[in-house]
Image 1 (tube, helix red, strand yellow):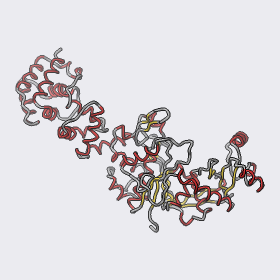
Image 2 (image 1 turned 90 degrees about the vertical axis):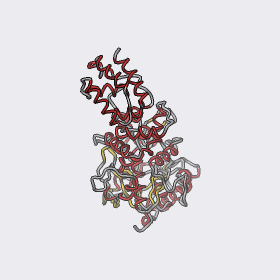
Image 3 (image 1 turned 45 degrees about the vertical axis):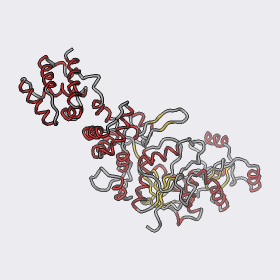
Length: 502
């Protein structure tokens, strides 16, 4: 590559971070790491009407949780700052005025009422080549009128003057040659009445100032590409324009349309990386983190939504992704989101995770459920015993709570139909002579006594499990008994017998 790789993730601080946004950040990050480049976080906060307090901090927290921390950001500035667009405001008007002076843009003084009237008059009204000469702007007004309006500080915007009947071409690193006819492109606003730039002007000015080499963004930005390419050309920066890569959409599970927060609400799964609390309403939208996803699994799942390394491999560490990522393996087609597959990734990551790495998150889940842990060694043994049975981190609570407290409820319906005084007598006898040197010897003693009393061991295993844990779940029942110890196992047998015999 000719120039140093510098990529940017440029979210707007307007609410929760959608998993599509995290994937854009991830692909930027992976490309930077693969090419010894720099990953920049730039906060695009120029739309003050949609700005939400706390959203920037939330975005930073999400990226940190995912393990894709930027090299440069508002919190960790480099030499290309400021990293918030609102702090770069003075630079934008200068370039907007330059475009006007060079004949590539114009002042538009139309009021909101003027525009509403036009929309009512013309269905699907677009402010552009077909309508600009009917509007109140510096193309239709005299120079004196324009100067008077500006001197009077009349509210106005600056719009790009899109040329007529031209074809705008560019090479997309994912899609190949892409072209647009300018006749279908409207005259986008570049500078708003409050002096803030729109995304169209800001993204070009900032990418130039920050020496961005490659621009990864979602496919939904493709229709804006011709405006941005014209701006790079009109500002005289065409040689410095970044290479473009428009990422495929993340689709609803049925493949029809882009995945939205509403789809997640409707279908019962999160679409945000972490919980987002709406500061106005206090409403909480659930995130993958709080549902019990490990960040490694979340990132692994996202990477394979629209990318693969050309093999059958599905489980990747972040360092493996950094090493294997390449743009030519990104799909053009949208990727269907599958929540069951997402959970599969999490299950696989929990299964292969070292016990020590699970200790803190599992401890946090148990504490949320009111279970305090004083012995980390005991907890680690339990984690090792049950982690293969857990898909989400909260599953550790249901799968382990009986190790910390005797069951208060029993699945008696699974025991009662075949319960008998003889079975009760078996368990009294088993408890009386109980020794728990190890799981295999305990199981041998259990089976030997069963045969002596005329039972098949299998018909006694389920009642024993329900005595210890309350239900038909958990790891090997003798492994459970070993961990509980002789006295606790005896106590649980006695307590359950009182219920089963009643």
